Image (cartoon, rainbow, N blue to C red):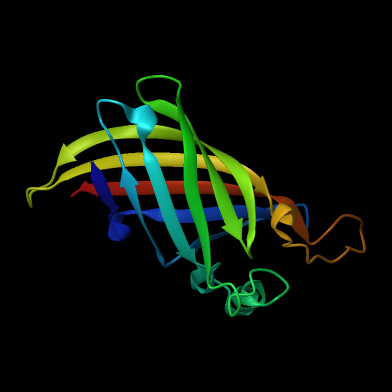
Length: 173
């Protein structure tokens, strides 16, 4: 069964260590996708999501412009990143591991997300909605997002590990 992402009630966000002492958080404002979810056989779920790299927002415009530049996402040449699922491993009635291929800058690597099903609800508008959370960690250098600066005190300006946190509300089609 096809489900659409309700963008007004969904969020794709990330965090990364800054100067090895704090986390910078950001999110992507523009994304879309579809999920084919068989409620009777959730392990057959298929997920496809596209994210506009230029829609990155860390609440600091100079940093966002740098992230759009060739040092990072190169948004002009690679306007989107894509996630396509390959497997769902059910762990319990409400949790699973979602395996898939993440493509950034024409580099595709497998990622694994821990997924939690938050339930179903009928909206006042007659739709059936489902809620999910997904979390994972990737290494940005796997996608040639290598830019960095050495700190005077040792270490680096930008951490390599990126924490991904996703909140999705889906609408049954």
